[in-house]
Length: 155
Image (cartoon, rainbow, N blue to C red; front, side):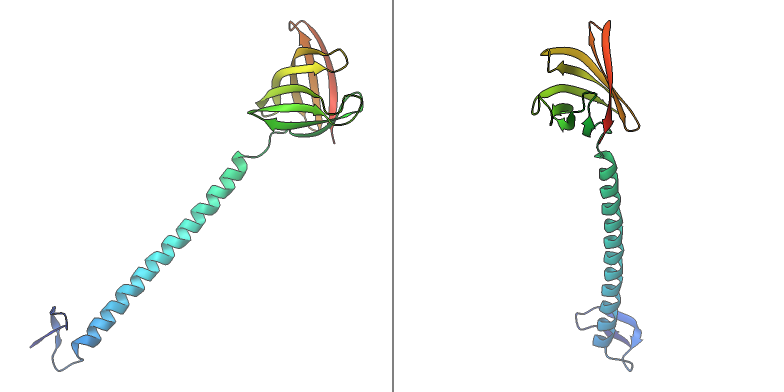
């Protein structure tokens, strides 16, 4: 004769003379919970790996441009180039014109363009910067014809 579980389910493969139905129900529930726990652990591991990958990718994506940092100008002053509003601001930190913003450049991967100001003449020129190793070649031009260049060194 077939057995019935305490909640009324028909259990055809468990004879009445065997273990009581509540033991089968407990064993069956334990197996289900173990399977669920295994699935949850697998999902947790998968989520952890995904979060780690996203963190690494975000770090790579937000790596600073090579122009960002401290530079020694041709005059021997220190200029700081930092990210500002989607571009890069050039500010003198030492020398006669310390604290003065002397340029704004935009670009990526070592090639930048924008405006450069000569603090002594107080004139602003069309400018560009090109990174090569620890050197930054700055160039200012009037109408893109008359240009002056100088090389800065990373500090």
